[in-house]
Amino acid sequence: MIRAAVALVATAWPSVALAGAWPLDRGDTQVILKIEQMRASDGFDVDGIRRPLFSDREDDMASIFVEHGLTDRLTLQMRAEWQRGEDLFADYEGAGPTEIGLRYQVVETRRSTVSVYAAYAYAGEGRNAGYAAPGAGSHDWELRLLAGHGDRLDWFGGREAFVEVQVARRFRDGLADEDHLDITGGINFGPNWMILNQVYAGRTAEGPEVAWVNAESSVVRHYGNWSLQAGWRQALAGRGEVPAQSGPMIAVWRRF
Image (cartoon, rainbow, N blue to C red; front, side, top):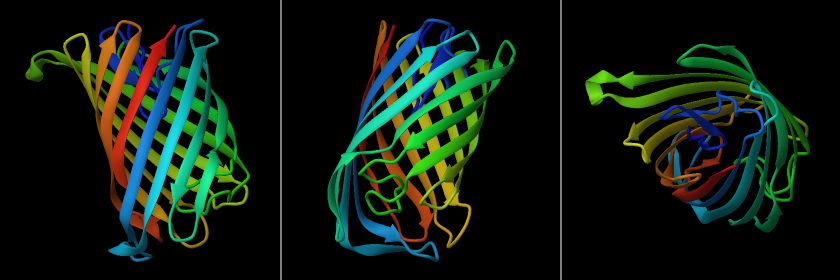
């Protein structure tokens, strides 16, 4: 059984990599190290129109994600990151947000699952929101609902695939509360290769509207208990002075 992480989280079940709605088995641990290098020369204004920025923006991130199966239904997860960035108004380097949470599987069938997730995050010196200045924000609480389904695609050579949808509300101290919608789809090509496509969308729930839609496509290669992921992230749409960032990402996963 392969357990994988997608973006923030991904796990797997026999021969199919599935996303974070699936819990880890009791006693299992997964660690993911991820590096992202985002660049933007354009941004989206308050009307959602893409326009050139006054100065290019750079954001580099190195993050570590750890999850551990406390029981067969309850998974502990933690995330921390280090950031470096520069734009017309800021030149910063320091810790990003640090998050700890619990994910509990409430429904399980042979092919599908539903889980809930609750987390607390402490803001760092870096960007705690892509649209905010470095250091803005303080404490966050998040509630998330995750639902996933995996199946064998007879019309596509019998390959196994999955889709997962997550919806969340993030309650923020020092920044506007946010609503999130994340969608992940993956398909296996043989026992060691997987293609992932993801969409991350969100918006502020109060004050002037800030919204964003980003997509990420990647390829994952499994090597026993190790996996290597490489891909590209691209901003698709936005509103409210959001940078139109794009760039590569690489990640290494290790399962214990």
